[in-house]
Image 1 (cartoon, rainbow, N blue to C red):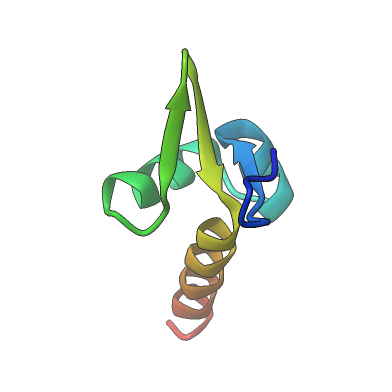
Image 2 (image 1 turned 30 degrees about the vertical axis):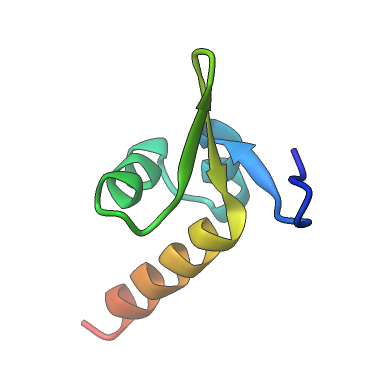
Length: 65
């Protein structure tokens, strides 16, 4: 889904597949306030810009250890 500002929003499962992480990682980032989430009915949509930024920071942290 693309919002009026041009930002891409995907379901948690689709976003996890797109950045090759588990959906639980996306949920953790949401609960920590790193990824914006919007519920429409029973489906949670996440902001892909936030997901990519959180994923990049996570991978950078994991490779520096």
